[in-house]
Image: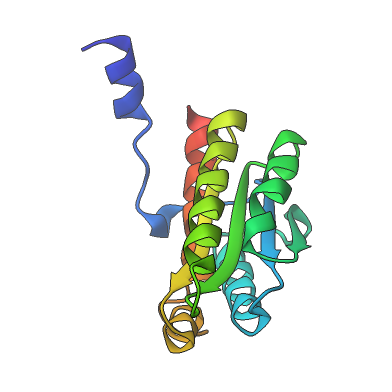
Length: 164
């Protein structure tokens, strides 16, 4: 087995239930647009981070006007060196124009670029739904809150980053 194969084998991630975010620092970028959805995603993300023992003092939340602005704030947080991972939260809901396609696609591409350029994991917790009802289901405080899922992914990726 090559050295890189050994690294990959030893860097395997534990099941999410075994994750421990104590001592890790997280930035959360949240869009104000469709705030009735994003506030529920943020609540879920905060709950998820607490579930994995992340101290509230180790979480910084930054608000941006809309999903298109998320990559800018994520890039600034990641480049600061102060965070082990970034969580992005937003809700892009299809309307009657092509604006949805532009915003959702560019947000996703920007978030991906940030993590590849900075080496800091950036989790994409931005909903892209056809309807308001679909967005509300995915932001529901019960099971399936995508903010909570994004938080779990961020803890997992931050822990993986430290191991690598």
